[in-house]
Length: 106
Image 1 (tube, rainbow, N blue to C red):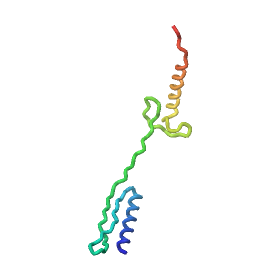
Image 2: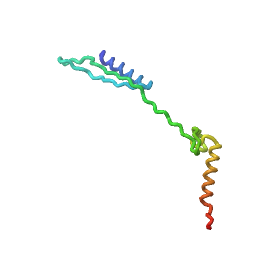
Image 3: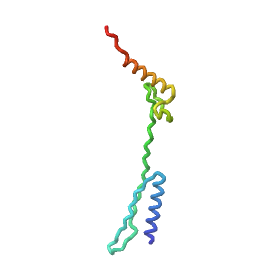
Image 4: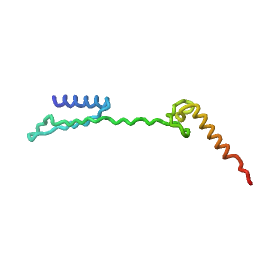
């Protein structure tokens, strides 16, 4: 009965450690002596810090702008400001106009 209570205590501490960002590896096996009686056994407990991957910041998609993009409902997370949005659209429109312009045959 004492062994069961010890196992429950160890499991509860493992759940608490998991909730706080720590992971535990428990070995709750019982050792049998030569006379067939189970004893408490040895418990191996290892603590490891949980790895947290930082969320990478999205950058503004306009050329030569390295500022982080801001999220809005209208434009999503693509541009850092309305000015960058306007400059980007202006550049795309100009390249579209240039592509449609007929070339002069000489």
